Amino acid sequence: MKHQPRVARNPQSPTAPEHEPTKRTIHEQVLIVGKLTVLLGVLIAVGLSSAYMGMRLAVRGTEVEVPSIIGQPVGTATEILEQVNLQREVIGERFDSEALKGVVLSQAPPAGGTIKAQRKVQVILSLGAKKSPVPDLRGAPLRVARLLVSQAGFELGNISEISMDGFPKGQIVQQFPPPNSKELLSPKIDVLVSNGFLSRYVMPDVTNQSLNAVLLFFEKNGFKLGEIQYRDSPTVSRGAVVKQFPEPGYMLTGGDTINLEIAR
Image 1 (tube, rainbow, N blue to C red):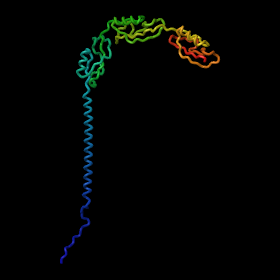
Image 2 (image 1 turned 90 degrees about the vertical axis):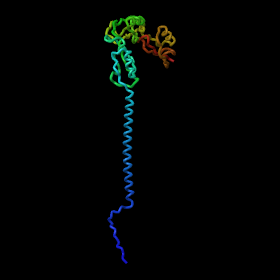
Image 3 (image 1 turned 60 degrees about the vertical axis):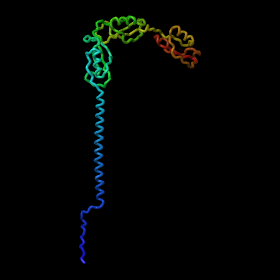
Image 4 (image 1 turned 120 degrees about the horizontal axis):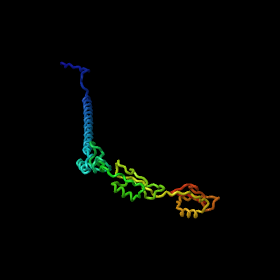
């Protein structure tokens, strides 16, 4: 009986182990997940970039270019601005010998820039050439000054008050611009008005006198009483003035007050 020869297996034969297909599958899955992650990152970056560009385009879509309106009459300037969806705001007027009345002398923001729609363009208008000099208001009552400036084509601006000796209440003490000025930028004249005589008097000595007597004295002479404080004083009778401020001999004006300390 013949025996079939046995074939010896080579221990170095490249026979794959049973678990090798599993390792290849995991490796392939890792590669696929990595590729998907990169792709997702690219898509997110593209989406964010598109959103950013869309927002910039949307913002720019609401901006308009500011047209030039200098030298235009105010009505024409208003129409030009309305055509590009902007508004006009007059913030001042001034005299100009080279521009007719109502013509735009300056604008802000300047022409060529961009601003959002519906915003205001501020303008200064011309009052034309000023022919009448500034009237002299010094020494005139305030009611007369109003009439004088109106007749000369001006108007009163800021009215400030001051107390000065020699100027009755309501009389113009000083003005700006000064009389007969010809180089003007504004139609308004600011004036400084007297609010009455500035009364002065010497502070009397009322110490050791009763509070009732001092109050009658103050009322009779128009003195203004300030604070009254009470404190113990063994050397002064109860209800009498212990101390006064200002002290005797001090020069006072009509608006000053006098504070007293009374013995209790």
